[in-house]
Image 1 (cartoon, rainbow, N blue to C red):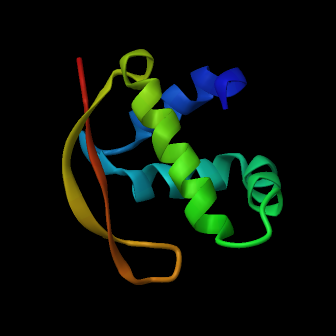
Image 2: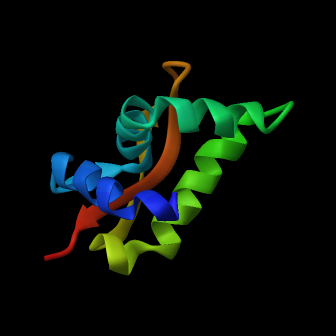
Amino acid sequence: MNKNLNELTIIIESLDENFNSHDFIRKFEQKFTEEYVEFLNSYSDNREIKVHSQIARFLSKNKKILSIDKTNRVSSLNVHNRNSSVQGWKKVK
């Protein structure tokens, strides 16, 4: 993901001022479908949970570079169309 930092910044710019990890993951999956599938295929069980956790950790680790900051945890629909608690984010100017 580090090699695509500029494109990840563009994804964040396309999101609302306040967004959550699921919002980012959906856009990431659309933009980097092949990489996303490779991430998923690198695990044999709990693939989505592991990959989505990795992506969320990446956001957290790179929040200064990406100009984002954590807010509260929020309820959001996951890939299985079920509500789950994820990290909320806001853009920092």
